[in-house]
Each structure stands twice: as C-alpha cells, then as structure tokens.
Length: 242
Ligand SMILES: NC(=O)c1ccc[n+]([C@@H]2O[C@H](COP(=O)([O-])OP(=O)(O)OC[C@H]3O[C@@H](n4cnc5c(N)ncnc54)[C@H](O)[C@@H]3O)[C@@H](O)[C@H]2O)c1
Image (cartoon, rainbow, N blue to C red; front, top):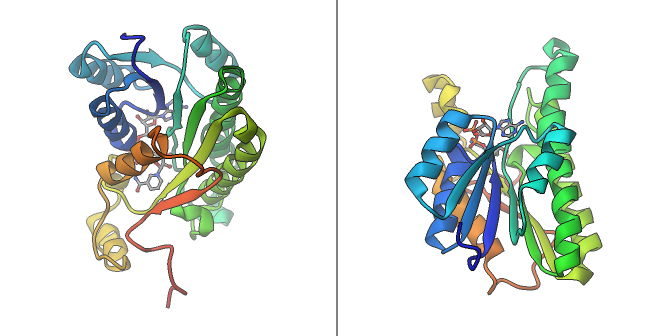
C-alpha cells in the first residue's frame, strides 16, 4: 500500500454500502483497508481495487480480533464503522440471542473499533471517524434490537466528538434510510414496494448515495462539523409521518 496516501479503514467493506464507500474513497485517492468477516468477497474486492487496497479478516465484535487487527496497522487517518446486521422480529418473538448478536456487532463492535482508533488519532492529533447508524434509530417496529443498537451508535458518536474534538479528531454519523444492498434485497418484493411508496422521494437510495456523504465528512476541506448525524434517507426522517 502507498503510505503517502491518506489511509481509510472501512468495516463491513466486502459488499453493499461498505463496498461503495471503499470504491468512493479509492477514487478520492485514499489507500483503503477493507475489514470484513466475508473473506471471499473481501479478497475479491481488494484484488479488483488494486495496490491501494488491502483486505483483513476481522470480526469486529471480538475484542481480541480487533486488537490483532490494529497491531497490523501502522497509521490510520479515517475509520468508517459500517459493519452491521439485522435480526428483526416483534419483541415478544425476538430471542435474547438475536438481541445480543445485533448489539454485539452494531454497537459493541463499533465501540471496540472506535476505542482502538481513538487512541491512535488522539496521539497523532488528527483523524476522522464516521459511524454508519440508521434512520431506524428513530424507531421502527420489529427492530427493537437494531434500533437500540443504532441509537447507541448515534450517542457514541456524540460522546466521541466531545472527547476527541480538542485533538483535531472529528466524529460524525451517517444515518441511511432504505438503501439497495444485499441486506434489503432479502425483503419480499411486496414489502419492498410498500417501503418505497412510503418514501417522500418514492425511491430507494443507492449505496453510492451513502458513500458520497461519507466522502464529504472525511474530506480534509470539511472542517468544524462534529458530533452530527447526516440522514441519507430520501426525506423519510422528516415530517410527522401521517
Ligand atoms: N441497506 C440499508 O437499507 C441500510 C439502512 C440503514 C443502515 N444500514 C446500515 O449500513 C451498514 C451496511 O449495511 P448493508 O446494507 O451494506 O449490509 P450488508 O449486509 O450488505 O453488508 C454488511 C457487511 O458487514 C459485514 N459484517 C457483518 N458482521 C460483521 C462483523 N462481525 N465483523 C466484520 N464485518 C461484518 C458482512 O459480512 C457484510 O459484508 C450496516 O451498518 C447497516 O445497519 C443499511
């Protein structure tokens, strides 16, 4: 990897939104570290992106694995915490295992990555962290685990903005709405159509729409914005919902 370039680490980079972020940051002349548990797609993407991309397997919910990951990284300018999962159900049907797994990856995994990166960025007095939350943090039936995990991500973002601001580290969140990725492609066509018709724009977002917002927040020209949550949701978070 070219160490002259700004280095960005993206979790959940093997597909979907994470892949789009990696492609976008490569265009912006970053060197990218792709982190995922999906080695097949991660390695394939790294090969396609070329010499400025490197894939490393890491389950971000595993504390020891996160330590091992950071031991392999010399320098980090940008951390994008994108890895996340859903395990939807109404609360009376939701198992505690499905609650724990979603919290472990979406919230604790993001926290473990932030903790490791924060120490580095504090010492180098420079850095950007972008956490991928979700519009669902505002509340979504069937997502008591997921919405709570993403509310935690928004709160974590605000706290880290306060803790790291004096060290020149800016921390923001992006909250996507309905985005066309392998995660939403699992929904039935009927459910998907209903969700699209409930959007102010009557469209789904593309992974590139989220990647554009991340690129803006990471850009060195973008200063003085920290602790914020930027919605990329076709306007779904706006209005009283009636
Ligand atoms: N797609 C949407 O509509 C939507 C909406 C709002 C928020 N989001 C959020 O955007 C992010 C990306 O979503 P997506 O739609 O691209 O999902 P996706 O399922 O297409 O991709 C997620 C990636 O994360 C990886 N991953 C899962 N668990 C991991 C772990 N423990 N450690 C490392 N990597 C792991 C997966 O292997 C996968 O490659 C998630 O945080 C999701 O909650 C997505």
